[in-house]
Amino acid sequence: MATVRLDQKARALIRAIPDSYHSALAKFFGSGPKDIELARKQHNDYKLALESTGIDVIMLDADHNHPDCLFVEDQAVIIDGHVLLPVPGHPSRVNEQPPIADFLIREMGGAQICRMSGDARMDGGDILRLGDIFFVGRSTRTNDLGIEELRDLLSHLGHELRAIDIPEHALHLTSIASTPTDNIILAPEGYLPKDAFGDLPNGSQVIWMPEEETYGCNTIGLPGGKVLVSEGYPTVQKTLEDLGLEVINVDFSEIKAADGSLTCCSLFY
Ligand code: GLY
Image 1: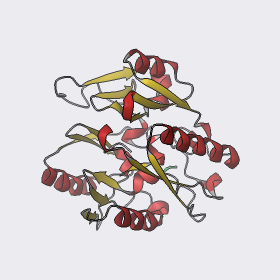
Image 2: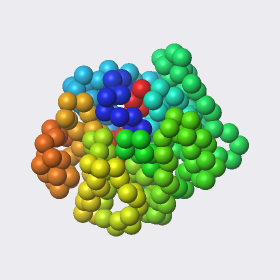
Image 3: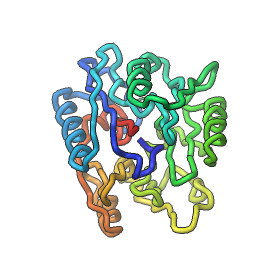
Image 4: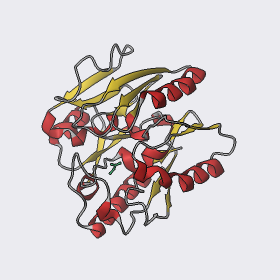
C-alpha cells in the first residue's frame, strides 16, 4: 500500500485468493489468470516475504463471489491512522469492502473512519505518498469528486494533494509508479510527462525506468533498507541495489495476469 511511510509499516492485511480468481478483471498487464494454484503459491511467497522483514501479516478469508477480492489496496485509504473507505471505481468490486472495513475498524480502535459517498469514486491503487505529498491518479477508477473528498481529509491532516492524469493504457497510478523509499519515486518512461510529479522536496527524486520494465516499477519499500520487487525486472533491481537497498524478489506472474501488482495485495495499518 502506497499511503504509509516506512516507519508506519508494522502490520499488513492481505486477502486470500478466491476460487473464482480466473474471472478477475484483466485488461492492462494481463489477459486473465490461468493457474489459481500457482497464484496461491506466489501470494503465499509474498506473505512470507513481508513476514521476513518483521511485518505482522493477517490474511482475511477469500470471498469467492468476488474474483478481485485479493486486491485489498483499492478498498481502503489509510493515512496516519485515519481510514477513508472509498467507493471503488468498478461496480463489480464495491461489495469486496465490508469485511475489510470491519477488520480495520476492529483492529484500528480509535481511528477516524470516513466513508466516501454519492458519485465520488476512488480506488486506493490511485494514491501514492511521498512524505507529506499525496499524488492521486485521475483514472477510469478515480474521479474528481473522489479526489476532492480525499483532498478534504488531506487538508485536515496538513498534507498536500497533487492530481495526475493516468493515460488510458494504465489502470492505476500505482500500476506505473511506487516509492521504494520515502524519498524516491520509481516510474516508467512512456506513461507520464516528466513534470507529472511537479517540484519535489530537497533530497527527493523521480527515477525513470525503461518502458519494458513498467510492471517492475511497482515495488514495496520495507523497513530495514529492504524493498520487495517483482522477479524479472533487471534494471529496476540494479537501480535499487545501487542505491544500497536489499532487494527481495517474488514471482508475481499470476497476479500480473489479473492486472495486480505488489502494492495491490496489501494494506499496511
Ligand atoms: N483486476 C484488478 C482490477 O481491475 O481492479
